[in-house]
Length: 128
Image (cartoon, rainbow, N blue to C red):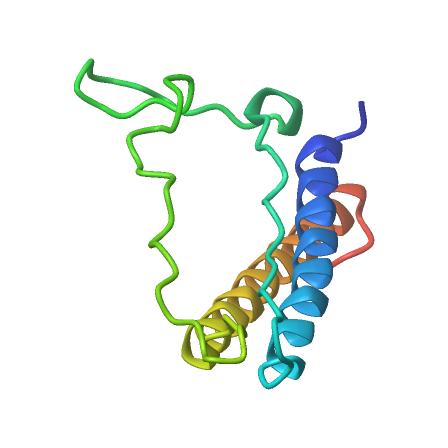
């Protein structure tokens, strides 16, 4: 494995997921007035910390662990309760919040990827 390859690959996969999710969320917003339309969303790719070369340090038994099912977080989403009389279930406020969070997540992954490339350039003597 190359230096930082696992982490860089995980960041690249995350950015591809964010791009695909952006397309799905944009389709939800575009169909906000379509009769009978139900909003869609993508499940995030599974995080495999060992493959990415990342490990969580658990210094106390009281700390959360990723290996215990859901890592201490509730994975169930809020139930959808708004449906218009024509059967459309798109809530624009929810969708726009998801779009903003998705954009922020993508920018974070892209920034980390860029910084990782910069560190690799420094390591091989091509950067300042």
